[in-house]
Image (cartoon, rainbow, N blue to C red):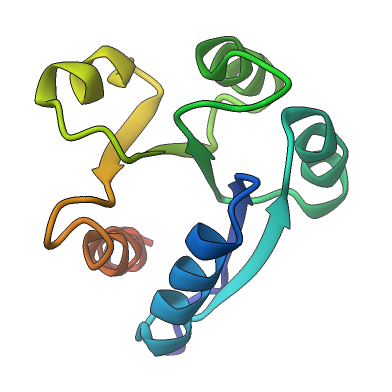
Length: 128
């Protein structure tokens, strides 16, 4: 039986982050589709048309407070998996984002921060 396609939306204005995540997904054993929104405003439009399974959000968005955006997401679609991407090395900072709707918080400055994304996708398909 083939694994279901996982639809992912990245909300970040960094080409570097988008390129790295796209590379990880390309090499992942989990089939996935990937879209990018460069702002919370753009993400809201994409969400309604694309219906992602996972939304990856950079810790600081230009046009919206990340926590406010997460609350919006949970009101709109409480089943979506939310992942915070941060460059902050502080565990305390990462833990501040851990809410009941945020399933993971990746620090891309850590050695294994990027590769952890593949593990989350693999675990999602194992549960499907």
